[in-house]
Length: 262
Image (cartoon, rainbow, N blue to C red; front, side, top):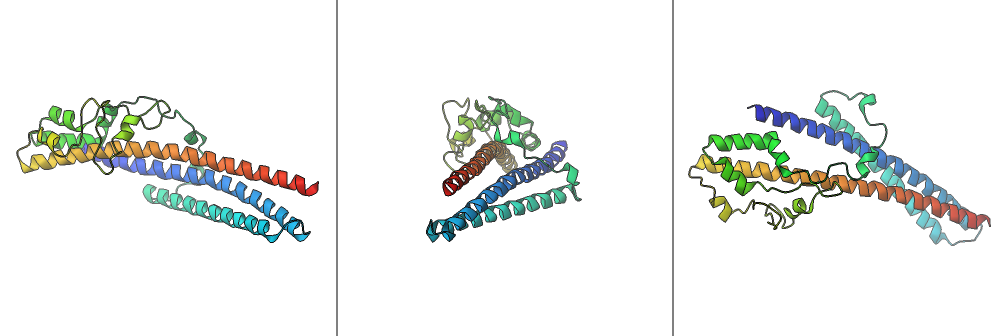
C-alpha cells in the first residue's frame, strides 16, 4: 500500500537524520574534549614544574596525569563516534557522503530550548504512515475505527512549555514497559490490555491481529516521540556540561599558574 511505502521512506529519512545529528553531536563534543585535553595538559605541565622544584608532592602530579588520560580517552571515543556515524550515513545513502554535506559546525540549536512548539497535539501522530497503514488494515478487518481510536489512542499534548516532552507524554511510560499509566489529563484511556481491549468488539482472529498491530503502531509512535524529545534534552544538557568543564579547567589552570609565578 501507499502507506507502507511512505512508512519505509520516512523510516529511511529518520535514520539518515539521526545519523547526521549523531555526527554533529560527536563533532561538537570532540571539539570540547580537545579543548579540555589541552587545558588538562597545561595543568599537568604546571603540576610537573611544581613537583620538579619541590613545591608539591607527587600526588597532584599523578592526579593531573589521570585527568589528562581521561581527556585523551574522551577524544578517542568521540572520534570513534564520528567514524561510526559517517559509516552509517554512507550505508544508508548507498555511497560515500560528500564532505561538504557533513556538518562542519556543531548544531548549536540542538542544545537550546523551544526547538519544538509547546502543546503539539498527539493527533499529529495519526499522520504517520505506519499508524495509517495499521488503521487501514484494522478497517479492512471490519473493526470499528472510531471505537478503536477512542480506546487506543490518547489525546494529549506531546510537548511542554520548553519544547521538551510534556508531563502527559512522560506519564504514559512511568509504569515501565508498555503498561501505560492513565492520568486525569487524558481525554480517553489507552493500552489497558484487559478490560478496555474487550470494549472493542473483535470476533475474528484476523481482526484481533489487526487490532494488536494497530495498538503496537500507536505505542511505537508515542514511544519514538518520547525518546526523541528525551534525547534532545539530554544532548543539550551534556553539551552544556562539557562546555562548563572546559571553562572550569581553564580557570583552574589560570589560578594555579598565577599562584606558581607569585
